[in-house]
Length: 112
Length: 112
View (spheres, rainbow over the protein chains, first blue to last red):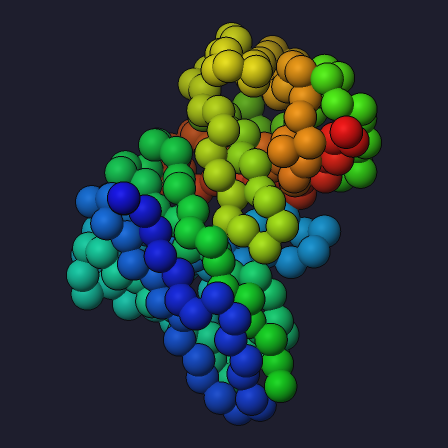
């Protein structure tokens, strides 16, 4: 079955630690996205990538980094510079920019 | 004024009721309109995708877009307890088709 796989489902970060969230898709989609979801705030775009080896900042990129070395993979690193990382992180993909985005089942990140 | 406004609810209805969910928006450049359903601790699932104004029906779900009023709706007929979830509207367009702007979501409970 085609889809988007995010791992792990739950992740805990210690102070000063970088953590990486995995996102893999087998939909052959060109574009991939990372969102953050906080209670009562809706989804906010962190980074997006329309092709391999290229990505752009979204609305809340500070404290995050990404890479896009393969079409199927778009990992997100939450760095120690992100002072409020506790949130539900969602990865999405689409075939082209104007096509609807499809989401994975998210990673919940908490602070130890 | 926020770009997309969505009543957060919560909305509670009896099984079999017709449910109406709505979003208003301010950006007249939006052309693509989506409704997502999100169960607790899961990623959003695409329900409906429409381009420009008009109606679209899929089973018990009908999406309406009124661009002149900047107003979109999702109707759910014969609602079921399995429809209990958060419903998110999203929209894009105006040359930035990659970027979805989301409403904050409406929490719906359908009581047996």
